[in-house]
Image: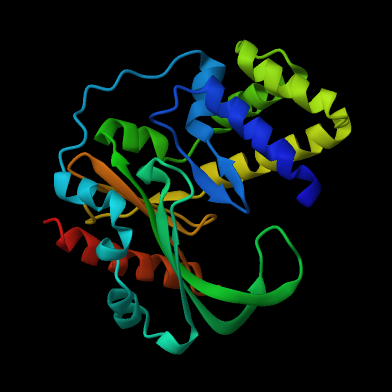
Amino acid sequence: MKKYASIFSLIGLAAMIISCGENSSSSSTGGVEVDLEDAIAQAEGRRAADPNEMGGNSCLLDYKTQYDELLTKEMILAISGFSEDVLEVKYSKALKDPSYHSISYRFENKRVGKIKGFDFETELRDEVTVKSIKPMSLNQFEQTYKVRSQEEINLANQSIDDVIEGTSESEEANEKMAELEKKGVSKETTQGAADIMKDAFSNVSKSYSVVDGLGDAATWNSFTNSLNVLQNGVQFELYVDVSIENEENKNLAIEVAKQILAKCS
């Protein structure tokens, strides 16, 4: 995976250049940003017009710069039942845009399991992360976090292939791929990275399910262990990985989300 790191970075940047950027579906899988909605929009050459309002939940938006107040250590300890003795807290503020900030609560509970995509067991940390508070309309939310058809997945894959081949409609994206060639990265290596991204697109796009009775809209992704919730034109995302059982991760995520929503009811 390490040899693909710079390639993922440039391909990811190219995908961001291709996309309209603001209203994307971005799910993190093993360090790869999966932006399926934007890939499909590029392949189709369009993005659906959105008549719905966004950003109405000013209370939730205010927490973009204080994630640790939105989801506190005390809340996590009470909901999870885990011990503070094995807790590590990480507040990520690497980028200027607070929409990309996050706070993670990680517990060294010595749980053993498999990392998705690998066929061996290792010790895993239990983790709950909240991130990605940003304005989003209901229409955007429903279009972004939904199961994709095989036709849509094929369109996304074609978009990636166009970038790799240097035939994208975006000259800037083509320039980014040319940078890889100048750095001596082989076409075979670049294609290998692209194939991993395609697999991630496919897995993520097929794993959404609607969660009823939570906010204005909510979806759970069983592949990424992510719960996306929309309330009055503002969304947030929870990543929960505390068990090998999907339902346990989902139920804990829902309970955390309910307490977050209660702060801005």
